[in-house]
Image 1 (cartoon, helix red, strand yellow):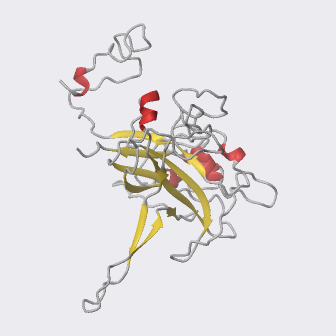
Image 2: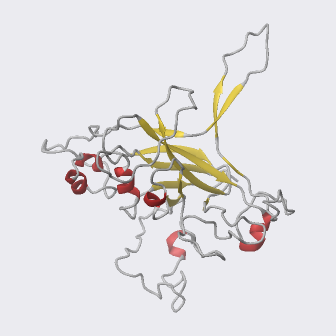
Image 3: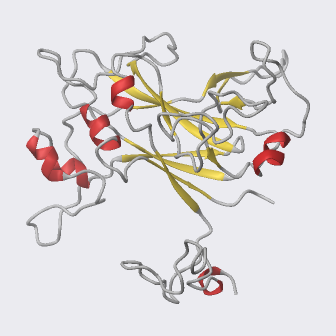
Length: 316
């Protein structure tokens, strides 16, 4: 039958096996016949639970990923940090956690336009970088992980320890050179840069919202992401919580897994890759306003918010 009609209520886990046991639990709403069958998958990428503590004052990027479904063979402080097979034979004990994505599929990332809580004395942007990773056939043999590296022999060792080949990379940003003269033809060159996204938004910027037909107020473009009441309490603009506060970024899946890295960098002229990194400021000492308040408010105090990730089926 396909779609929802082929899945009985007791068929996911089943009664007595942790499933629904024949009836959907409240407040679940059973899908009606008008529901289309979704061809797109969805997940939310989030940082580790205590990022605002261990990243405070550092310039290190924050990892955005999904939680580990099972504990690895070593005690870990946070399920968002380590790969589920970390520490096994041939796999680094500090291998980070990523989200499985079908290789070659089209991915849409909803990255929040995180504003500053106060206007800092320096101008900066939150920089995001998608990182792709390809798994090894040994990973598939161990845990059924999708793979594309069919080489099963060990790669380069890590201080003498055996390591499987698990490469990671970032997407390219291409800048083409001007078209060459036909008479003096030479091959065109493309300058390749690491694909990073600096989402620049000042605050308090006036959010863009449509006016309602009654003329009494603005319509809402989104809901459930930030609490307008809490924003008003700290002197913010409540309407920001109702505006379109995400930037869509399209990517082609360049691996079996995906994670995002986020850090802070000063505004730079176009092509300037030497702009200094800026430390995270989640604390609020006297005389030093907390620059990253909204970053913490969005990703730490809101359990359902994060970078929303959607992808379709991989091409056949």
